[in-house]
Image (cartoon, rainbow, N blue to C red):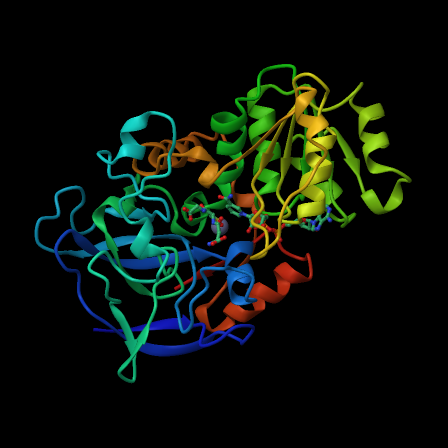
Length: 368
Ligand code: NAD
Ligand code: AHE
Ligand code: ZN
């Protein structure tokens, strides 16, 4: 079949809207009509050439929601007309990782997904006879896409696509980092670096967990108002204080119980670790750093009890947890609507990247 898609033909180039060819689903795969997709900073990171796994030409996008239109042989988990969210971390339920009870990092598709192809080693997308690669197993910047059935979560059809898509990455990552990875407890002091589409969901998660203090740190003063909407109690612009660590120790009575990096900047990751309280403070890396970048700190920071960890997709198991988070939204337990600042058509998708880089959006969503 033919489908409209925004194709990344090369690093740092504008996405081009073209009609690409899409092969139908093979064994264990499903064809999904994407109804809406968010634009996450990770899409921009890959487009800008910072991703060691970035492949071109490819169809980016990993934060979508849509409808199953066709299923391949042997598919039993979903059926046509089911509403689904594509999962960049699948949940097969049977691999070593899934059965460990210790991680959400299902390994079933990881090797092929990282190479931009489906489990049989080929791509379903092409343009003028040339291969176009998949991205994070999702490629939601295409109106239709093909995914393995273990890489879709069936959701309540009452959820509007232009909000549900955000659960496919930002909402789940931010809230999950707090509830699943850090396991923030009531009364904790939390510091969040980077108040974008992910960091605001960390704030929302910290509020749900009952944190007594939630400090937001951002270089963009416009983010103060945003943070406060979701429960932030204090705001710090690191460019406006002499010594950000000293400032944070004073503000938090000796350091954070939990801190989160949602910037992807390795210097900020160090600050996030070092603003933690001696003896017990835990810092969670969410941000994705450029290929080749490394983190550093004095080992003494860890010797004296601080803990450094990271999280992918907020530690959430997609097929199990994503439908629950959509339910939280429908039940009014979490907010999504205010964070969707811009609705765009596919033709306007490049504007979504500009808005993000200019710090003017929280989430832009493309509606097909
Ligand atoms: P975003 O662009 O919406 O937000 C980033 C925020 O960080 C902005 O508000 C910006 O002003 C702020 N910032 C930038 N530099 C800063 C600095 N030096 N100090 C303080 N604040 C600073 O991006 P997003 O979509 O929220 O994504 C945030 C990060 O999380 C990205 O690195 C993205 O790739 C990553 N991410 C990781 C996962 C995961 O599973 N681990 C999932 C989604 C996104
Ligand atoms: N491909 C990069 C790393 C990119 C990365 O860390 N991706 C996160 C999701 S970001 C979503 O916005 C992730 O889940 N990673 C785990 C995984 O298995 O992909 C690189 O460094 O090669
Ligand atoms: Zn993302």
